[in-house]
Length: 171
Image (cartoon, rainbow, N blue to C red):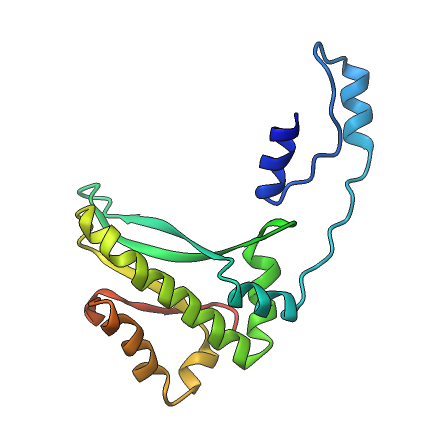
């Protein structure tokens, strides 16, 4: 059971109740009726610390051509694994970043750096599509943004034509 609790915590889940087999319907009802312990909301300072400590992970969402079923692109999706708190869903940390221009910049470049770092692994696996990154409108307002972003990908040999940018819906 300890391993199951650790695994749940690593996913950001809270184990509220442990029951033994065979499970009785009344025990299940009782367990489901208890409110879960509230988790503290992360702060902008927590996110800044998490970015500094490389707690950001990327998951790659495949984009497949319907006509050929071929993988044509990937979209890099930011995920935050906060030690002691498990996974923090994007809905809880993206707004924190977008409320602060510097934090938005740090998040964007953490995602870009991680994607550039992963590029050789993706190409070694014969991926030859594009790798889309989400950016904030705040990023685009910075005049040095294109050059700084190009530097991240140039350092890893990632062709800029393979990195489409998508402006996030929350602007």
